[in-house]
Length: 103
Image 1 (cartoon, rainbow, N blue to C red):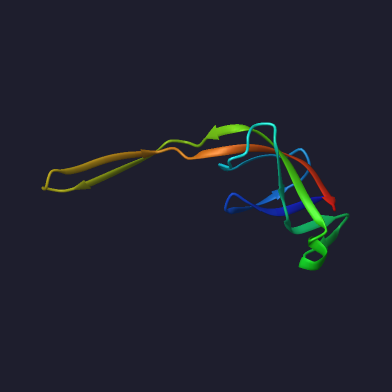
Image 2 (image 1 turned 90 degrees about the vertical axis):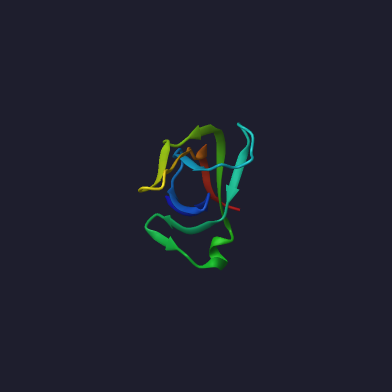
């Protein structure tokens, strides 16, 4: 059994005991997060109608925080002396899916 959920601005395929890195959420480590699935596949049966999906819920436990890779940005214009160097490192939240169940 697996489900497709919208978590952190992306759609993720999840099943029980999967560990995901989603965009940072404000939940504390050890707390639970719940999502409504966009699609559920259970025993070969695909459930995609919103009336049936409203009875399902995907729960996950927050494990902790993580950081993505460092991205370097360099801006340069020839013959003008313009040089800029920037960096960015995205912050993520690690979650472990604990259950996909009907309400």
